[in-house]
Every structure is written in structure tokens, then in C-alpha cells.
Length: 558
Image (tube, rainbow, N blue to C red):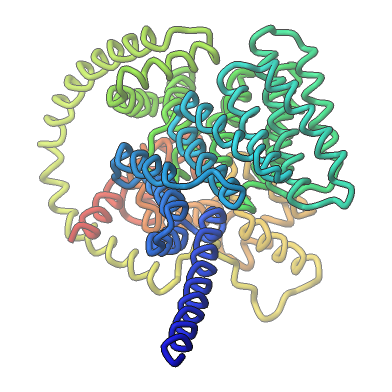
């Protein structure tokens, strides 16, 4: 009797321990699905804990989840090892009601990993299996999720008519079921609506029939006027930008792109910012608004958050090279060289994809242009060598003068660094307002100048006495008088002080700027001419921009 009681107690303790452990396992598994929110490191931590389970269904899930996380984080892994283990454990799971939901999830995770890898065929195969389990299980929400993914991949595989038909039916089904405005179902309706508009745009690209653009606009405009999250609204704006660009409504398209970039900037969605910035720059370039286009392409290059060379990054160099060539600007050589270097490093398959994209954009052969650029670059290199030889001779003569001035230049450089460290020079240098201001008009002008400085209005190429006076609400004579009284300098000296102080700080803080050409640096702070910028820079600092940058690099290395 005693032994029976002990056995019963042990059984219940084991049962409770197992239940608690399984409850924790389910908690760990749930964390994987929110890795975009909690981060991949946290998701990997919880996913690894699922491997403590003895159940085949859990181990199949753990392998599927870890495989995806390793791919997303660009870590090394053996794909066959993961897929073999998933298949091995799935075969051990009986096809019973209690396991159907998780089996559908496992194949859905596998399909998503294949889609991320760009293998749409295998993605489709796994979604078909996931759908089979989901339909057997009869869970409406899971069915909606998997059917949505399946219709999306059909569209990616070029089955646009089927995808459009299925998505429209799904939206109707969700509307019918979602009587209580369930957030989950509402989110999937929004996703499907976005996908529907995408496939209408794809159908337009196939047929050039504008009726498909009209259909896409109808659904997007409904979303635009509904209460949706910022991320969906930004995506709606991006799609409307594409549509209006195709309809040749360029100004409207640009406004949508800018709205999208503004929202994505608040959300810190860097890849989406890059895509829409490129689309905006391309639109401006094709409409010969080169100055604005140049700003967008430069933003893509300077704001890149990773080292991955994608289409937008590579083509930004190409278009900057084109723009600078049209402007007969020596910065063209830099961007030609950089584009050539980046393009040379691509695989044959990647070049083929880039060529297709470029042909679609420009209706030109990218490889032919690439060869032309290489030839042009070779010629420029020959000219460059001749120029270098001439410069070497000139440099030899200049060395004597240079070494005489070197000590003085080093002293000036060190003083500049001290000034920056002591915050005598700051990015937004402010006017020091005197204790006593003669009248309210002068106070208004001083406050106006402070606002222009805080807004960095002085970096604009059109910043001059006239535009500054207009912006503040004064006249040029009075503004000149106030600056002379309180800054003890002319308006031109005041402008040059602001710009040179700004670029000094930027060169110290932003190493990328140190690789810019002098012309590019000049444009950053509002000068149209690199020579004028160099002259003013040296007047203010005692060093040329080149000397200052070289000393910065030397200091950083040491």
C-alpha cells in the first residue's frame, strides 16, 4: 500500500513537472514569431531553449526557427542539416488534431525562409503542405495567414491572375468573419490589400493596360483614408508614388515618395527609406531635375547602414556619375571609378539581374554602358598619369615652400582641434546676443538669424543677404547693419564663418566626408565652386581642405 502511494505521488510530481516544462517550451516558441519586435538575439535565445524538449514536434519547430534566424542574421549554417532534421522529426509526429496547428506552422516557417532566400518554388511547395495541415485543423486565423502567404507567392511566381482572384476572395472572407474588428484579421486584410495592389501593378507591367493601375489606386486610396498603422500608411504612399509615376503624374508621385520617406524615417525603417529615396531620385533625374536628384542619390550613399551592395546603392553611383558628367564636374571620375569597382565585384548572375533592372529603367544595355565607362575611365587614367607627372614636377618645386610652412600648418591644425574640443566651434554656431539690444527690431533680426543657423539655412546654395533678409522679414540694409554691430563683420564673412565651422566639425565627426572631393565638400556647405571654397577655407583656418583632411587621417591612424 505504501509503495502504491509513493508511485502515485511520483507520478503526479512528474506530471506537474512535465506540464510546467511544456508550458515554458510553448512560451519560448511564441517568442520566435515576434523576432522583428524583440530582436533576433532574444529570439535565438528562446529558440535554443526549445531544443531542451524531448518532443519531436518541438524539435522540428526549433530547427525550422533556428534555420530562419541564422539566415536573417547572415550567419553560417548547413541548410541540408536543418532540412533533414526537420523532416526527421516531422515524420515522428502523428497526424492528429493536437499536432495539426504546429505542423502547419513548421511548414509555414520553412516556406518563409525559402522566400527570404529567393527560392519561390520551394516556398510554394512548403506552403501547399502547410495549407493541407491548416485546412485539416480548421483554425480560421491560421488558414487566412497561410492562404494569404500562398496567394502572395503565386503572385511572385508570375501567377498574377490567380493571386488577384484569391486575394479578393480572402478580403471578402475576412470582411464577412471580422464582425468584431479583430486586430489580427484586420492586419491580414491590410496585408492582402497591399499585395493586391502590388499584383495589379505587376499586371500593368505585363500588359501596359492602365486599367490595372486604376484598380490598384482604388484599393490603396481606401486604405489611405482608413485608420491604419504608420507602417502600412508609408507603404500605401510608396505604392501610390509608383502608380502616379507610371501615369506620368510626376509631382504627385514625388509627394507620395516624400510622405513615405517621412514616415519611414520616424519608424527607422532604413531599407524602406533607401528604396523610396532612390525612386524619388530616379524620378527627379528622369525629369532632368538634376540638383534635387543628386541630393537623393548622395543620401543613399552617405546614409547606408550596412555593407551590402544592393541595386539602389550601386545605381546611385551610376546616376551620380551621369549627372556630374553632364555638369562637366570632376567628381564624375570618382563615381565612375566607384561604380566600376562595385560592378566588377558582382557575380555573373548578379550582373544579369542588374542588367535586367537597368534595361527596365533606362531601356539601355548596362553591360555596354559598363564597357563604355571602363574605356572612358582608361582614357581618363592616361590623362591622369600625364597630369600627375606635371604635378610631381610642380610638387618638387613646391616642397621647399611646403616644408617651410609645415610647422606653422601643424600648429594651426592643433589649434583648430583644440577649438573644436573646447566647443568654440559647433555645428550650429549661434550669434552671441549682447546684454543690451538697442530696439525690438534688432532683437527680432538677431532671433531670426539664430533660427536660420539652427535650421542650417546657411548650407543652402541660394543663401545670401537678400534671401536671409527675406526669410527674417527685414531689409538688406538693416540686416547688414545689425550683423556689423553685433558680429563685428560683414554678411559675407558671417556666412563663411558659419559654413567653414560647420564643415570642420563634420569632417572630424563623419569619416565618410573625408573621402569626398573638394567640389563635393563645397556643395555640402552651399558653395558652387570648389576653388572658392578652398580659398575661403584656407583664409579661415590657415590650411587647405586637403591639408586638414590629411592631418585628420594621420591623427586617427595614430
